[in-house]
Length: 230
Image (tube, rainbow, N blue to C red; front, side):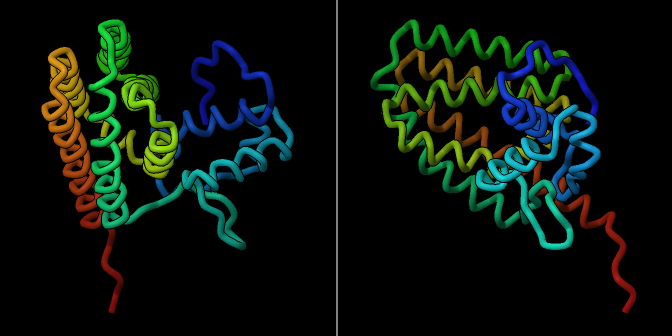
């Protein structure tokens, strides 16, 4: 992994390693299915194997990495069927979170979401996939938390974490980044109007476009894979 900008090292080695691996995955530096070379990574990050193993176990519990005997850790690789299922469950849970949030948000809350969206747009314009993914996540979860349903938000977070490795595949395309910003703006307009139906519809469209783009990526990768000799 490349170092990138690291303005502040987290207070513990484990937290530092967690943030670095997540950043590498959300930026696309580590892609779905890539192995995680523990010795090389520990040396690069300047940590021992202990905090690295602890961080990997946390990420495994979140569904972001997987462990296989004799092969070690790697970034999780999902099938298109898995992704569709995750996005369908998100659709159901997020609709409830947004419905409840719309009943509770204040003008100051929507202003906060607008501020975060400007961060999304700045990262989008700079082509900074990792920063855009982080700001996008903050935008969505700030909204979900306005629902006042922490258990629901925890379930949604687990679903997001299971597909973090695929977000960079979507954000790496300029047209997709523009589409994300357009859909966010539609959602924010609905929140200003306190229109839960339109806000939910905007998020549904948002997820549908991501799934369609990922289907194309899967199809292209399948076409590029040589057929086995029979």
